[in-house]
Length: 84
Image (cartoon, rainbow, N blue to C red; front, side, top):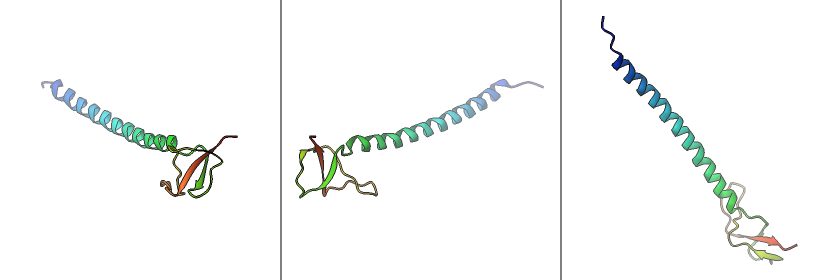
């Protein structure tokens, strides 16, 4: 009866490494999802989204994006920030 601890330790290391890899993949997936939401929110119009032909009584924000209800960028709208 010889105890072979080397084989037991390598199996334990494989199990721990597998669990750590799964946790890492989950953390990366959460981070990628949240960073996409963050990027979308930082580009969102901070003022009013007006039709492109409508006069803006303020300043036009060229970087602010207007979105449709399904979350897509609406290029037919202009972001207008009121001065008052």
